[in-house]
Image (cartoon, rainbow, N blue to C red):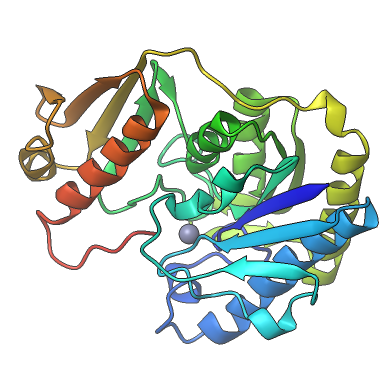
Amino acid sequence: MKIYISCDMEGISGIVHVDQTRSNGQDYPRCRELMTEEVNVAALGAFDAGAKEVLINDSHADMRNIIIEKLDPRVQLISGSLKPLSMVQGVEAGFDAAFFVGYHAGMGAKAGILDHTYYGSVVSEVKINSKAMNEAAINALMAGSYGTPVVLVTGDDRVCEEVREILSPVETVAVKWAITRYSARSLHPKEAQRQIREAAARALRSISQYKPFVLPSPYILHIKMLNAGMVDNAEIMPGSRRLDALTLEYKTDKLMDLFKALLTALTLGSESIPQVRPK
Ligand SMILES: [Zn+2]
């Protein structure tokens, strides 16, 4: 059994502030350790259930957060950026199942901890085929296109709710409960890690109940941005159509083109304002 893990940072137990997730933040060194421990226990849970191979993709910001020497020696780690498949780089090799660890809610929908969708400084909403999509759903679609089901998502209670609505059935572990966008009640990291390891193994022991997430083509992407200047820049993307001041539309039969169009539009949108970084 081969398992793929995409690991973000905003959904790790104890993390509630942007300062904790940026490499120049005062709290960042200990928060990257917490991230490393949480993704490592997800891998251990996979090995408990009989996995022979675990590939971890560091999926947060510049994607150099996870401390490789603190991981179980059986895993391999993808780190650094840019990567063509971004948060799901590596999944194209084909896996029996995927875990999304440390994930967060989509921008605005549930006011989760540090909620955003890919580029928090650009996006207010992403829809595919008229359905609001958070990062977990978009990444699950990409994994699904390679035949890989997402069987476990961990993060705050809001992202767990969202993925149960979109991806069900899916195993979830809420490691914290959002009070506001920047405050939460968290499990102790050791307890969060215990629950994640158990949930990872539990999901894989009933792996046959999970199916790859797929949507019928053609795909219609709608990206709503935070201001019109961003769309002014993004609408130079070939094949795109501006629907109104804030919304860009892109239609395609190919999921990979949709994913590339999303990343292209967001990159262009972010260049209309200074100092924007992918989250
Ligand atoms: Zn992130």
